[in-house]
Amino acid sequence: DSGVTQTPKHLITATGQRVTLRCSPRSGDLSVYWYQQSLDQGLQFLIQYYNGEERAKGNILERFSAQQFPDLHSELNLSSLELGDSALYFCASTPRTSGSGYNEQFFGPGTRLTVL
Amino acid sequence: GEDVEQSLFLSVREGDSSVINCTYTDSSSTYLYWYKQEPGAGLQLLTYIFSNMDMKQDQRLTVLLNKKDKHLSLRIADTQTGDSAIYFCAEKPGGSYIPTFGRGTSLIVHP
Image (cartoon, rainbow over all chains, first blue to last red; front, side):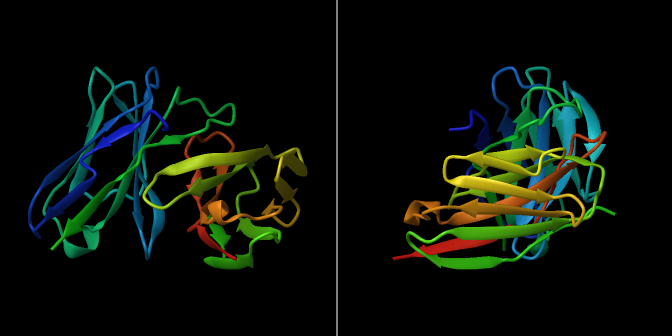
């Protein structure tokens, strides 16, 4: 158990809908990262938050957005869903955002999103 | 640009050694990692190596780094069925805190 929790575990929805995925980082970790894992794209970095502020953006679509709340949990919002958005979405946390140190990422178990 | 490549599948017999290879492109990478993903779970850090090292050993795991060729390998000695998982290579470029992951190598261990 990494200490990172994600809800829900599974989500099935229809095209055009909007969903919200939730992540609670490890106790004390300030930095949260979101990843999308699909068969054809592998593990893609989406976005990072540190202590409530956006720090880095990766391959995140405009239809997707995220935020980190004062209690440090984070939500990833996916809207106007398409079939191709079906994937595993992982959240990871680290204690800080610094580039120094080996900066191990602790991953949650993921949310499997299926868009029908 | 940043790119991490690894083969998609590796099949070995139980008790043999497994070697998973990875190439990366960013010469400024400070740390290189191996993460393991078991079925239905998130990724978990298995081991890492700092870029000024060329080898790191941790029990059954040996990591070799060839900086000149930008090649990283993970050797698992005496591979067990419990080692069946997807293994991700990742690099952390200098000055960045976002690792770049490869697509993962599925290791299948058969009796």
